[in-house]
Amino acid sequence: MSTAALALFIAAVATLYVGVEVLDAPRVTATGALLLGLSAVAAGIHVLRTGRAHFQPSGPNAGRLLAESFGGWAARVWGVMFVLAGVLTMAGAAAALVAPDAAYATLEQAVQTDAGRGVALALWGTFVGLYGLARALGDEVTAPGAAPRARHLGRRLFGLLCLMAGLLCVTVGVLFVVSPGTPMRVVRSLMQGLR
Image (tube, rainbow, N blue to C red; front, top):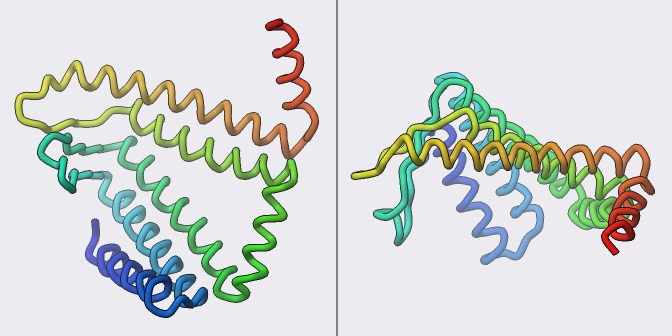
């Protein structure tokens, strides 16, 4: 992670803590979310520039988890995911910064429509698919005594499964937006066919 991304992340966490726990102020919380989005964009740009992504495990189980390094196209896919997540976070934070109550109400109303659910499902599918693509393109696992080739095969197969699931979610999401009744008719006909 670049120094700028790390500094933005620390500022975001501090601002979010103050906004949620100390002041209970929606605009301060939105500012923290905006900084969090900026840190994700900065980290994504760093990964895209360097062509390397390294994930070090942390927490109580860090000794048993594997550190992962991605290079080439796999790292660039991670960079795209970070940038996309950051931009989406910043867009939501900017809306909440201007009018917190209106932003939440608009989001709540949008998700209750077929088109809103379709957009949400397509976005979720995009992230699942990109994660799968990054896994399928390969990674380097570093752990003491690990059998790297066997781990690569399992991780790549899991990546292909995630990629297919993500593409399915994007397809269904787009169907919900373009033709709202179609996905439910297909599900009903499949359920009747199973009986």
